[in-house]
Image (cartoon, rainbow, N blue to C red; front, side, top):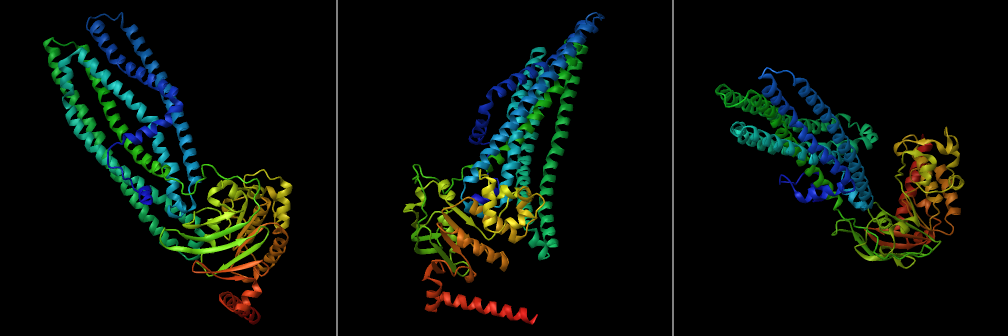
Amino acid sequence: MVKAALEDDPLDRPYDWTLLRRLLRYLRPYKAAVAGALALIVAMAGLDLVGPYLTKLAIDRYITQGDASGLGQVALLYTLSLLAGFVVRFAQVYIMQMTGQRVMQDMRREIFGHLQKLHVGYFDRNPVGRLMTRVTTDVDAINELFTSGVVSVFGDLFTLFGIMGAMLLMHPKLALVTFAVIPLFVVVTNWFRRGARESFREVRRWLARINAFLQENLTGMTTVQLFGREERNAAEFAQINRGHTDANLRSIFYYAIFYPAIELLAALALALIIVYGGARVVEGTLTLGVLVAFIQYAERFWRPISDLSEKFNILQGAMASSERIFILMDTAPQVTAPEAPVRPARIHGRVAFEDVSFAYDGAHRVVQDVSFTVEPGRSMALVGSTGAGKTTLMNLLARFYDVTSGRVTIDGIDVRGLDPAQLRSSMAVVLQDVHLFSGTIASNIRLGSDIPIERVRAAAEAVHAHRFIETLPQGYDTVVRERGATLSVGQKQLLSFARALAHDPRILVLDEATSSVDTETEGLIQDALRVLLRGRTAIVIAHRLSTIQNVDEILVMHKGRVRERGTHAGLLAQRGLYWRLYQLQYKEQEAGGTTEAAV
């Protein structure tokens, strides 16, 4: 449901005032600036009325009377009104653009902060590219609402009503003749708003798909090229891109008809003014100055009306974007800190799973009735085939998910009762797929903490990462590109070890942490771990059984349950699942050795 809402625009009503009220709260910190902009807009609307009136004055009082003595003064006033309009409009645009940028800053900061609070499973279900669209394109649409939408609407309304009032005061009948085309304009405007709204929503949907497709394929470019998917991906992207283009073309169609139609209606109104007003001038019941002023007012009368239609379209686009944003913002984190968390003075590291069961979808349990305990300073290995539930147990320990039944405890305290920040700061998890951030080698080991460089170096030396770091151009200050593109898989793995050890965790989790390094590097890491795991609780997930022979206890998982437990030697003596796994790997190693010898 949420995924569909993120991609599509379920907003069927033209405007949702609940959404608009939620948007307007972002203007509260800047209400003084908004009030100033409104005052300037009112002033601008008043200045728009000055020019045509001065034209009437010049014609009726001086030109038709054959008196040119006052024309210079009128021209000066006209020029001053134009200069004042320039200053007022500049100040109003500057204030609103500045306010819009600050609102965008606040909104993006709030969205990003909320994204960091969401549980890991949310990002498994929602494409990253689509979430990026929420923070970028959708926020831009809302910025356009604030800078040229909501506040500017008031300016258009003030201008519109001011012109209508001036025309009615000067000549009510001629004003009513001018207003006779308004019903036609209402019909055209409603057609435009309905069509443009739907095409706008379609453009947004296709843009979200483009972002999602690009993010997925650029991230997996190595796989794309290895499997020769370039042509197929290009065809898929061309299809999505064509859909986006067609949606934009449909939007252009409505604009291409709307603005010429407005011009046509404005010309029709002008023709009515000339026909009716010209006849009255000939009869002598209307002055030439009033007729010319009406023509000028009519030209300015249609501009705010067409602008209002555009503003309503901006408003609708912002409503669609805001709805998607608020769907995201209203997604409650499923893993939250308790209202009164238990804050132990020190984490000793006793880990216990008590009859734990868990299902990602709430129905099909991937872990069922699992119980085990790891005492402080002891080590345990989890082995089993892919999908047995090993990594799921570590996700439950780190509380990326909450258990379906049973409980996970640290030092006898349910992890759901701990502050997630304290829980995770007491742990270090080394994954098979290492994620490095843009920055330096040292910053990737520190990860934002204030760990001194001496401790960073010590951790790197302990896992034998120091040797390759020192060969880099700037050593620990060498810049790491996005996702560590300039480093080998083994080097990134060593950095992840250094990162974990530098933070001195009480609980260390290794999830296939040595599977990406060569045999020599693995031997160095195993040597370092024998020293570094002393005094820490360690849980090791491994497929390569040769790496876990020295742990205190081994649990064999199968289809979400613990099937066997014991030491390496004891499990081999049982000749059960572990023995079969070991025999299978031993035969593979023998076959690999024979092949190497033959080569």
